[in-house]
Length: 164
Length: 368
Image (tube, rainbow over all chains, first blue to last red; front, top):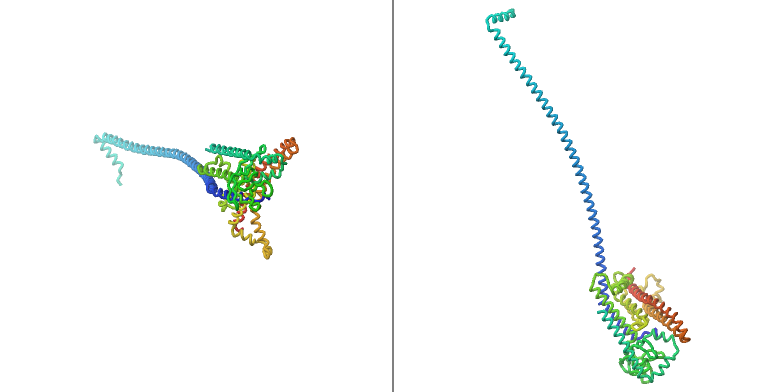
C-alpha cells in the first residue's frame, strides 16, 4: 500500500518545482528554441525555393540563348545564301550586259562602216562625174577650137534634126 | 567555463559525500553503546528480498550509498515537518541516526505500518503523523533533475539565439532531434497544425522530465538511483497536469460528446444516463491510466533488476560459492534488463507525451 500511496511531501514539491520549472523553461528555453527552429526551417525553405527559381531562370535563359543562337545561325545562312545568289546574279548580269553592249558596239560599227562606205561611194561617183565633166570639157574645148569643126558639128546636129 | 563548472560540481558532490560519511562516523561513534545491538542485529539479519527491494524503490529521508561493516554511508537530507502539536521542525536527517534515535520528539519509524515515516507520540500515547514536506531522496532527485533540465535547455536556447540560422552543434544536436520529434510526430500529429503551439512547452517539459528521470533512475549510485518516475506522487502530478489541460481546453463538441453523445440510441441516455456516466468515467480514467502506466512500468523495471540482484544474496545465504556462481548469471540478467530499461525509459516518456497530446487533441477536436 505504501508504494501506491502518494506521499504528501513529494506531491507538494513536485507540484511546486515542476510548475516553476515548466514556466521558466517555457519562457527561456522552449519559446526561443521553437522560434529559432521555425525561423531556420523557413530560411532553409526560402533558400531552397530561391535556388529552385534560380535554376529555372537559368534553364530558361539557356534555352533563350540557344534560341537566339539558332536564329542567328539561320540568319547567317540566309545572308550567305543571299550573298551567293547576288554574286551569281551580278556575274550573270554583267555577262549578259557585256554581250549586249558588245553586240551594240558591233552593230554601231557595222552601221558606221556601212554609211562610210556609202558616203565614200557617192563621193567617188561625184568625183568621177566631175572628172568626166572636166575631161569632156577639155575634149570639147579641143574639138571646138577651130571654126571648121564647129560647123561640122552644127551640121551633124542639124542632120539629126528633121523638121516635121 | 564549462569545464570549471563541471569540476566544481564534482568537488561539491565529493565533498558532500565525505561530509555525509564523517557525520555518519561521528554519529556512529557517539551512539556506539546504543547502536551496538542494532549493528549485530543488522549483520545477522536474514536477507529479506522484499524489504530490500521496497526500500530501494521507495522514498527515504537520507540518500543511502552503501553499508560497510555495519555502517550506513548515506547523504543526510533536510527534514521539514509540520506538527499540529509542536509546530515546524527543520533539521538534518542524520539526527535520527537511521531511525535509532528520537529527535525533537519525532521518530523515524523502522518497522510496522508507518515504516519510513516520521511519527510523533502525542501526550495521550497515540501515534500522530505530522505533515512531512522534507527534502527526501526523491525530492532532492527531483530538484537535481529539474536543475539539470534548466541548465541544459536554457544553455541550448542561448546557443540558438547566439547562432541563429546555422547548423546545430554540440548539445543542440542531442536535443534538437527530440524537440523536432515531439513537435512533428507528437504535437502536430495529435493536436493539429493550428493549435499545437500552445501545448509544446508542456509536452516538451514532460517528455524530457520523464525521460531524464527514467534514465537517472537506472543509474545505481548517487546522482541517480532515486525511483522518481516510479513514484505515484510524481506520476499523479503529471497526470493531473494533463487532466487539467484536457478539461480546460475541451471545446463544446467535447462536452457534448460526453453529456449527450450523438449517434447513440436514446435509451442508453434516458432514463438511466448510462453513456454519460461511462463518458464521465472516461474523463478520469484516461489520466488515471497515464499515472498508473508510468508508475508501474518504471517500478516494475526497478523491481526486476533488484530481484536479480537479490538472487545473488539469496544464493549467497545458502552457500558462498553458490552466491559467487549465481552472480555471473545475475549480472548478465541485470545487464540485459538495464539495456531494456534504457529502451523503456524512452518509450514510457514518449507514450506519456503522446497520450497527453492525444487527449488534449481529442478535447479540442472540431466537429467532424
